[in-house]
Image (cartoon, rainbow, N blue to C red; front, side):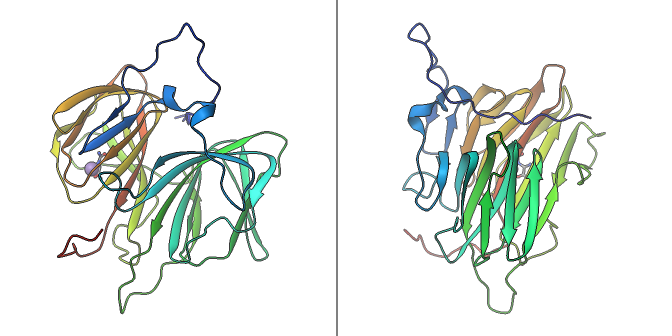
Length: 275
Ligand code: UGY
Ligand code: MN
């Protein structure tokens, strides 16, 4: 199966356009549609060169609590020798377009579309675009939650192409998950997976769970249930789902519906609201 990875193009819609239809920010979920990802909503980042980012989520009252998610576009020659400012910051890089080089000491990894890296908290890594074309990737960041007696998890590299999707139980391959993390490894406190639905595949019940989600549509279309509302979503749309926000979906059309899914996992719930 050949996969595609939607990449924001930037620019600014023409004055004849009216593209404000489905951007939504509610207490339990948000939808940032692909059409919102124009040039004027990008940010520059300190210690990054020739780079700009669509910051889709960050810890904020009434919004994401456990993660930040950025789509970073690197021009040729762009990058950072010191990408992560937080000493406890762990991260996932998932490339959607072009190629990036990640260096860790003398170790060099080139990731192209579908390439995946988990960067351990405190890892001394650098990133650059050494090609002649722009490169775009998701960078999902979380403050690592240490647990006494559990080791800090190691950095690893993999890709969509080398990870076989696992069919979800009793779904006859209509719903599968490409798991980049081993679910049994409790050193990791975040997962980023790709969820795939074949045409007509569904989440047939209202999933409601303690984990928070960031969800970015890589390809295909679906109707997605967020809390009590159904939304039509397609390539490049981003959704944030608060902990316990009910969710379900029905894939539409004739091609697979696929999304990159962030989830906080493997830790006790806090017994007090922390700000
Ligand atoms: O693992 C999950 O929580 C996943 N099934 N949720 C989702 O796709 N919305
Ligand atoms: Mn879920």
